[in-house]
Length: 67
Image 1: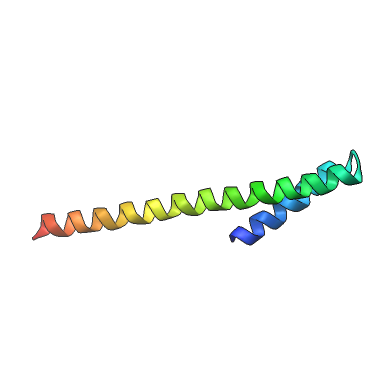
Image 2: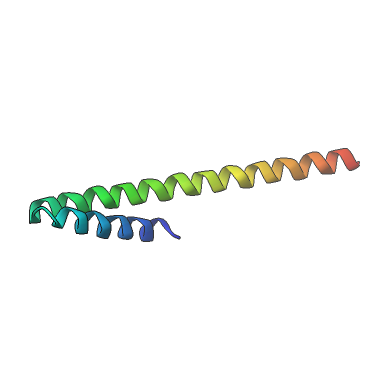
């Protein structure tokens, strides 16, 4: 899922939960939820990038060992 989708889902959930209390809480919950969703997406994509880098390192090590 893309970063924008995580932010949108987080914002919607935050607004819904905040809306149980008041309109002001819905607005704040939406903003915090969007921030949390974007942060989660960034963390997940960073983890994926690290996995890709590890895979590339492993491929280089295997190629060196085979040579």
